[in-house]
Amino acid sequence: MLTTDLVIEKVAELGGMTLSLDGDIDSYSFVQLQQEIHALLERGVKLIRLDLSGVRCLTSSGAGVLINAAGKADSREATLILVRPSRSVRDVLDILGLAPLFWIEK
Image 1: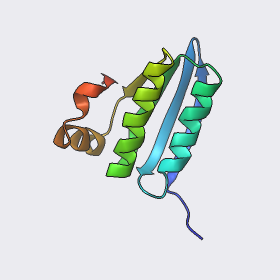
Image 2: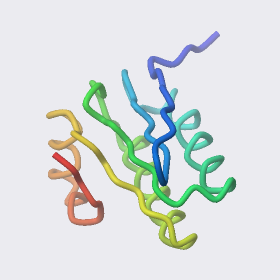
Image 3: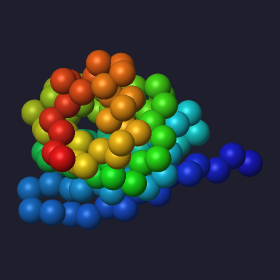
Image 4: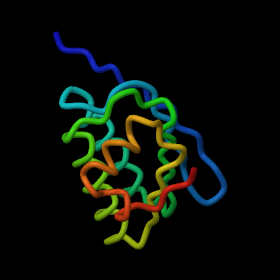
């Protein structure tokens, strides 16, 4: 049985929701994150903050989830913010040239 190494803690905040992530966003865990984000957008949440300070590894699958989530949020007139991305996340976003696609809070 496959297990994911991603823990998602949800905290409702005025005007939105923060998902604090701890672990890896990879080919095993990306579906879990994708489902959480899509569920929030389906409920009409207009501000989603992803606290990425606890993310140890971001693979191309994980980067794909972030790109898809940003596009879905935009199409629903919602905002997706990447909060305090870990060094490894920043490195992947920079190497792939994706950082300009996101609103990033340091």
